[in-house]
Amino acid sequence: MKRGKKYTEAAKQFDKSKQYDAAEAISVLKKVAKAKFDESVDVHLRMGLDGRHADQQIRGAVVLPNGTGKTVKVLVFAKGPKLDEALAAGADYAGGQELIPKIQNEGWLDFDVVVATPDMMGVVGRLGRVLGPKGLMPNPKSGTVTMDVTKAIADIKAGKVEYRLDKQNIIHTQIGKVSFTEDQLKENLDALMSAILKAKPASAKGQYIKSISVTPTMGPGIRVSTAKYV
Image (cartoon, rainbow, N blue to C red; front, side, top):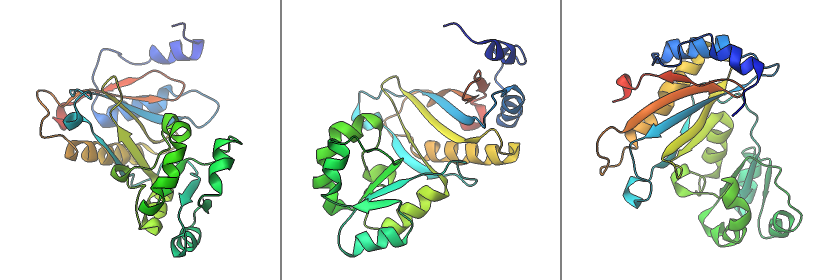
């Protein structure tokens, strides 16, 4: 893959073969991030799991102590009092059956996270082909299928991120923006890693976390030592 000049220059500023401790890696990342916009800080974890086995799948969510730096739009599927509760709690959009054709036929996707009460999952399930591929389907493991819509909305707005094992046995997620302080990014990374360590399946064999890298949106990945997280 051909890389741009800024990317190539950034990659020369650190040792790509070295595994840095988390604080050092974040310090390097902030130095090499050169885009003209406030880049996201992404984390990529190569896991020692086999996602083909159900008992080695991991999926969950964690509220980052310093948020994500992004404004998140929340859509809630609910009815009756729960619909009113969702709007009162700060949902950007809330509704039920009437939203199906808007999403299915009109392609309306002006939201980042979908929350649903359990009694609405029959309705939401009809949107599986639209929401599923975009990672927007509500799921109990990520706390987005719940009767406590107030807490779900509060957590999402406060900076909740989801993590899940993909087909390559890698977890991709974000821990904030380049404009965050090094301490804020380190605290967010520690919170994410703590959640992933707690989610370790009982059936996991060998090295649980094989590699960790942090990267700005437009820049190279900096390897983080796994020693602290073994």
